Length: 138
View 1: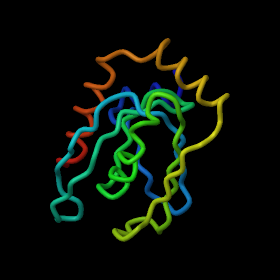
View 2: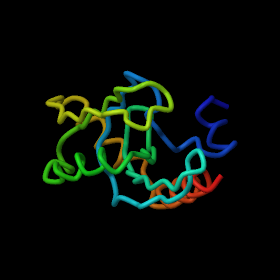
View 3: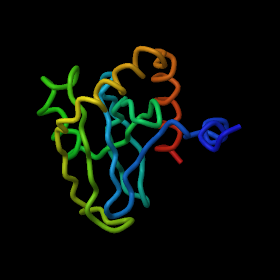
View 4: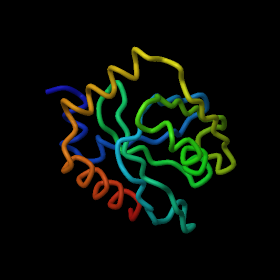
């Protein structure tokens, strides 16, 4: 069994967070955003679960409200383009910033949209949302 499969078995393996400076995720949007509410270090927290497909497969990308708003501004490209988000800020930095770019990478777009067609099942999104809700309430 692969690491990825083991992590799914352990829980939360279908979730993605950008938590360290310079971390990057390249993705396409594959579903509607979901509001996730919980606490972080004892403070109420609101995040957005973004169903995405990456080169590693389907993930629920858990993003802050600022990054989710940046993503929403590009909704017209959701069915055709790849996005890249980059975190700028150390681990635990609540004031981290995020760059979002629309990539002009036709090969990656073709690959990711094919993965959606071949691999994505609606139940996967629901399972990831439930896992994220569980993580957010711990």
